[in-house]
Length: 334
Image 1 (cartoon, rainbow, N blue to C red):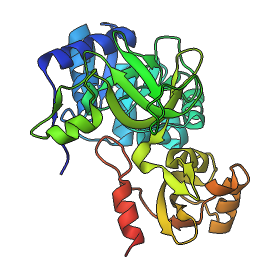
Image 2: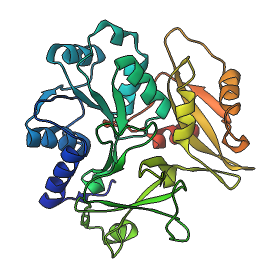
Image 3: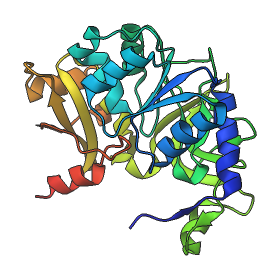
Image 4: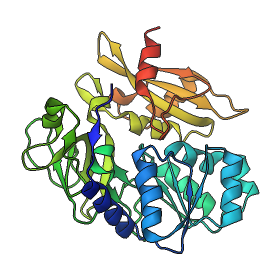
């Protein structure tokens, strides 16, 4: 069962102010709301921020690509808040070319990692910036966002106003220098007071000084931009090396025949774990498992090479666009 996150009125209002100001939202904008309002991303960034600044919010009961594109054309959507699967469609689906998307100033992707290559591909096609933010329910949810004109490929942006970030070695607890990967710690008025009726889980991630230990791995560059590598718990341990599934997924998505991809770890007697991939091919496209494995192997270190590939029709995802890796791992045991 998922842990119940307690969020106060102060948490939510603080984050609405942080997000709307940090992202440069304006009252004359037109947003499209396709993400569910029962999810923290949709509730806060779309509904509450939209109401706070007085923007027009065009809502969709469920995602349909043709309707999504038609609404952009009809209402002159200026800012589109989405999850990575929709960015994949915007970058690669032929239907996009049939609609006028010229009013879009920015596509904002959240809820799951988005590769720099995919963001640039979608941005070039739409003629706008495709940017990322970072956060989680425990942070109401935004802690990092891309400021107007501050786009940097692969980055989730800079620390939100009134928020502090640390990159910490998960083993030693020492702060790390720029460009070094460690666990992301965040402190600010948007951080939850704890989990409902679960003091032990609260103590595991929220320390006495108010720092939330996110469980995500990333680094900050010299300009203050945060780059998220992957979840600490989702890293694949190959012969002592740590492999980020998101890195391999981003690489697979650059192949012209691949529409979607997911990578998980599979137990292996010799290596401990090995990366295995699930791949959805574009309609009418064909590529062999051997060729796709070589495509990846030619671009990564030996311990990051994919051990096997399963071709599938869909990648299981949550309503917010996160890959349901548990279902994929479970399928390996069938």
